[in-house]
Length: 399
Image 1: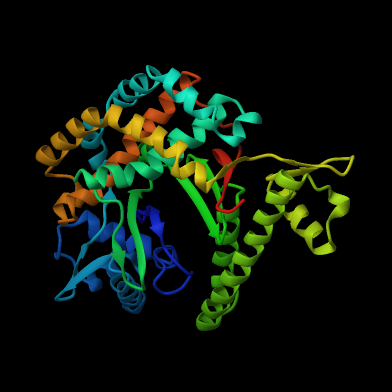
Image 2: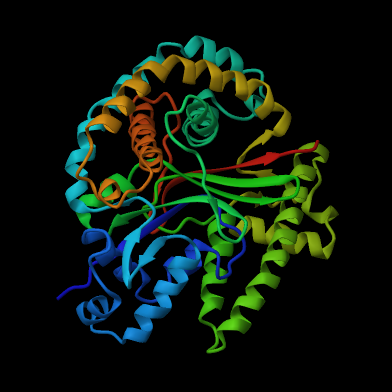
């Protein structure tokens, strides 16, 4: 028997890489398989002994994973039986979900393209307009900052879905998992609906794209290094403690990276003007492809750069225009979804319908982004082998 698994996605602030971090917990050995079995069955109908037998593993392994999952509020335990507490989408759920997103990307996309003159006028006010085209800037603003950003507050205020969930360990995030299968993959990994963000003080490093690989960006690089440290030694508690220290080190590195990019933009500094420490940071940024160090010692910034004051003004205005424009369409879809779904896995496990609706929004805006890319209204991210499709940006809070 082949053990079926899940692929996990985390939206919000998952915090330090410790026992309360859902990525840390859900990536423990057999956690995925255990959650799949719980989700596949009716709530509170399967015991840990039955799970151990199905997976052909020791009961102790299941018990440890169950404890870890209960600690982060991913499952509910009752009389040695279980219920999942976050949306898990299985193969059998896909057909039901497709009813609600069929052609919706095209419908919403056309509504947005119809107001392009208004949007272009706003975009031309941004600082980065001197260096980038409308389509590149709108990729970051519409596909990411609005659809995967301001839209959550907008729709939450209108009681359409929830944008976050308070979690143990002083975290605020939502987990969504999809069954690991080719059929499900096109709804999870291959649409443009994923934002990676790494924040440090005044700087937020972002990449936005699909999930069809491991991106070469600040967030993913730091996560991969921490994940490797988790199994670096047989001393679990030491690994976790070191990762906590590494978190602070990474924040410092990210701050220095952001500061150097800001200096290049605002002071036009050259590579030869940098200190040895700054040169190390510049080389790190070049390897991540955020900058290029040219033969004449000049430094080119390869990513779109935004500023917080623009996010609060021009980009907020763009967000209001677009979301008000598409709200009637989105509301109709969600109203129908909430009334008619009954057999999909999250509903059977009594997961808050607004959490499941949150994931439906990802499917909707992912389909819309694909349409906008196809029509050339936003930039087309190149498909990089092993990394997927994505584009990077940086937001600076202080000038």
